[in-house]
Image 1 (spheres, rainbow, N blue to C red):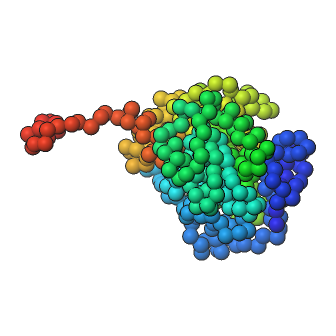
Image 2 (cartoon, helix red, strand yellow; image 1 turned 90 degrees about the vertical axis):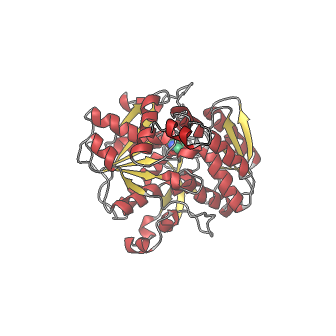
Image 3 (spheres, helix red, strand yellow; image 1 turned 45 degrees about the vertical axis):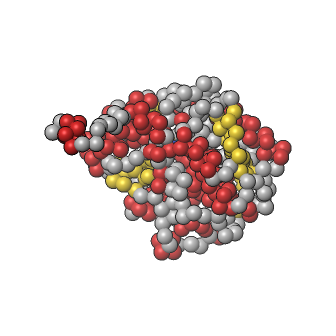
Length: 401
Ligand SMILES: *Cc1c(COP(=O)(O)O)cnc(C)c1O
Ligand SMILES: [Zn+2]
C-alpha cells in the first residue's frame, strides 16, 4: 500500500522498517502511497465527520487508531481584520481547537498509532512545548510511556503543565531545542524508543489533513496557504497532501505555500531570499514565539521545495508584529492563539503592505496553537484587573461611572 522513499536520492524502504533518515545519504524520508490503487472518492470522504480520520485512505495506519477526535477544527472568515487589510477572502484555520490545543495532535494520533502498529513499547520527542504536550496526551491514551526533552526555561507554562499532568517523563536540558533533538534522536537510535519529532515521516502524514480539511471547508482551492514555520514539518506536510490530491485528480492546481518565521529565528526565509540551495542553521535563535524558536529546521529541504515549486513566499515578522497580531486576533475576531500562531496572519499583514500579494486572493492562514498555552505572555501584554472593595461606590468609581 505504501513505502518509504528518500526525498534526496530516491532510495525506497519497506513500510515497516523503523527508520528516520536514508541509510545511503542521510536525508529525510517520506511516505509514498501507491495512489493508483487507492479508489476512494470525494463523496465517500464528505460523508464522514470532518477530522483527521476522514482521510484514512491517505494515512498509513492499519490498526484501530489511538484517537481523541482530533482535527475538525473551525475555519473562520477574518471579516474585520480582512477588511482592515483590504483582503476580502482572508481565513484562519484554528488549530488551537484540537484536543491538546495545537495541530501537533494531528501528527500524534497518527504517530502514536504507528508506534503501536510497529510494535514499539515507548515513545519520545524533543519539543519547544506543544509536541511534548501532544505526545503526553496520546501516549496516555495508548497506555505507553513517553519521554520528552525540553529546552530549560524556554517552554510556555501551559505546555509544560500538560506534559507533566498527562504523565510524560519530562527532562529539561540546559541547551536549546536543536540540541534537545540531537540528544533524543541519539537516545531513540540506541535505546529503541520510537522518535516522534517531525523527522518521523508518519507524523507528518497526520498533519497534512489541515490542508484537506481547509479545502473541504472552503469548498474550493485556496490561492495561498500560510503557516508559521519552526521545524518546517507542517508546511511540508500540507504541501505533500495537496500533491497527493492533485495526483488523484481531486484538485487541478496547488495553493502558493507561504512560510512565516520570527525575525530572530528565520533561517528558512534567508535561504529563500538569497536563493540558497539549502538552509544555513542559526546558532542562537531568539523570539517571543517559543514554538518557532528553532535555528536548524529539520524539514528545511522539504519546505524549500514546497515554497519554490508553488511560487509561494517566505517572510519574517518581528516579535512586536507577532504580539500586535495576537492582540488583534483576540480583540477583533475573538480568536485566542499563542504568539507563534499569530505569525501567519502577521506575515500576511506585512506582505499585503509590501504589495507582495494580490487583494483578490483566497488566503488560508493556519493559526497553530491556543492562547492558553502561554498565559504569561498574554498577561504581560494586558492591563491587570482592578481590585476594589466589595461595595457599589467602589465599583462605580472603578468604572468611571
Ligand atoms: C510546532 C509549532 C509550530 C511550528 O511548526 P513546524 O512544523 O515545526 O514548522 C508553529 N506553531 C505552533 C503553535 C507549534 O506548536
Ligand atoms: Zn537517500
